[in-house]
Image 1 (cartoon, rainbow, N blue to C red):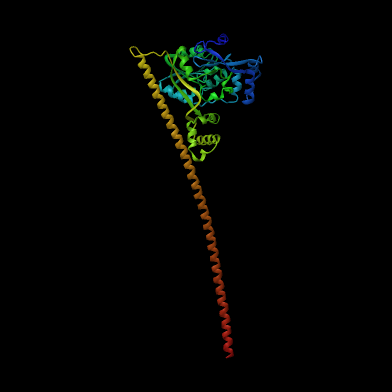
Image 2: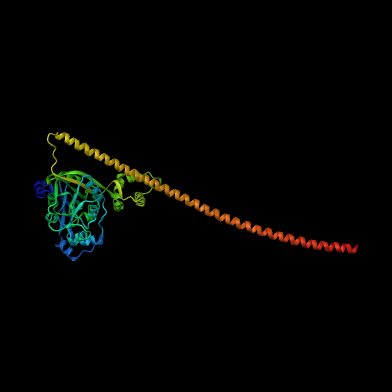
Length: 440
């Protein structure tokens, strides 16, 4: 039995440990293409079907490293140019990303100047880098998409990596290289990172954004976007901490994307029972406390979007954000390695406490905004009632005015009648008096 198990063990393509084993997740590529067409409305060209679905029983299986936790499908079937051209025709990619905002903030904080964006797409992040004054260069795998970024005035490299970048820039050494949602698409992440290593200065930064396999996407492991030919590998924080030193990097920072608004309705039902802070907040609001969880979620989503909230701080989203530093971790000469390690742990703990404090403050701000919104609606309802009362009083005043006018007209009529009667009887009385005098 042991020999059978060992026969399936291979070296991890990332950390190189002999601990890469197959899992039970196995998919037929023809079935995955059919799901893209039926579930996502994608229409693939014949060349895509010929490339991936031949032979008809061609399949991939997820493998997992018992040492670093890295996951990759074998064989690592990547998406082709035509595959992505067909998929992106549905415009499902998000261009306004949280990791862009976080990346700009960190690039400024670390004093970076020259920045390379690998997998730059049509140039959304390059636009932001240029606006902030960075010397920004892009590298894009798709010629069609690269042309879109070049049309926006950016230097975008094409061809072999990293040679194409070195030739186009005259051998620049970059302060930072960004790989946002790139590593999970390549069948050779170690090779790609080795190329990145040639482009970064000796102590430079590599800023990475990848789907967090330990985050909410673990509930959607069979989602099309998490499977080949779209995503080839699976990443988590332990993967970076365990495997990166062997590739010439160490982890400088790890952050998790707060849950973005376009994923609220999909992810929140799975997170609700974990009593994340939005759930606790809804359970304290009388008007929604006794509703079913799905109704609480819909109510929360509606109100947060009305307030302009885009991310839920403290609620894990799709992506893991990692800053890697080039070089090996080593204490300075004459220092105590244990003391340096303790200092690093304390610094990391303080940073996490500060992050938790910021998350709590943001949560309180959202709660205050919700309360303000409820109060504004109450005041608006009261103002509407006052307005309706004013209208009703005005109508009653008009009715009283009409009644007063009618009474005035009747008084005038009575006056005329009184004068008429007075004249009539005065004449009759005069006639009677004359008759009486005549008889006398």
